[in-house]
Length: 463
Image (cartoon, rainbow, N blue to C red; front, side, top):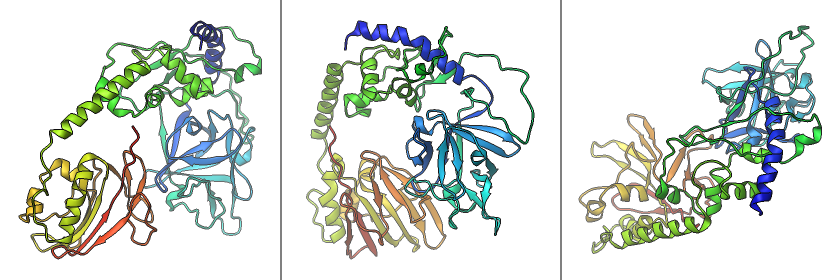
């Protein structure tokens, strides 16, 4: 793309984009953020421009919502990106509308577990008086509020407001409640919006727009918005090798510098990447593709050299008679190299005679400890409270902990799940569930352990 043409386009459109943002994002005291539902693996409520409502595990520009108060305990919910209002019809279906009606009024209640519920003010079961709640199922789809399973006590109706209180936003609409005939006599003073641009990073950088003359042509709202900004470059760390290890591809590196708000302005992911690569993003030094690839190759060469210098396997030269120890020896090299992230379930008695069980991240244990005593028979491999999960059948002690390779999902209704941090696939250890292709379930008969199961999670190479 011609750099001069892109700069001219940015200069021409920044005034329109900045003033449109100023008209819609000015301080008003209304809450703006996301609504996180605890059901399943966790979903953020989304409102689409076509009126569809669902949930997404990762927050996006569609999950940016604004909650505005209508009366005591009654609120409305608007999608900032879609500019539509969350509503529930007379059958209990969730949808989004362009105009605010009585279907868009919800009663917000705070539960004892610190989650909130949102019930329709207009619609409910008139025979029993049961309220209809906003809810998502375990797959992230909107549930019917009139369903008998949608109750205030069920986790599908529990939402955690994650509000960015430092984001002072003013919507470009006005809601008039018919029950309250009050008019606003004082208009809020226009302020320069301060919008956080790098979600999930430790450095907080802001975008500062200046007000400019604009036309009230509605077509301007649908143009390509510029997101060139003035960044504070003081104190930006240059963790070069750490950044190379964090991303597998150059496009992922560029995506890390793009936020949902940027996509909202440009409406084109490829164009956003090109602007970042040209250095117009204003986030400091941006590597070129050749520089990124060269650093990536250097880091991989360093890893290979370190692996070649590693000591021999802990199981090498050992005469293993137990089936479980032989299975561990067969998987030791793959788990040390990162090709396989095995999960081991063990149920046996501790040295105190108490029955314990738990799930162990084999690759993480290999990295943190010496397995030579286990293979030589001097020690027995048993679950610990610091493993993925641990349970003492006598004292009823329960513990779970994330490892280097897995994130524990303990609030799943069907049982505990483990999400691999590298390929983000879910390992379901429920014996009643159908085994996954990428995580086969292997039960092993052992002479020294009461019950042993191994889940081999093979990692696909992405580099």
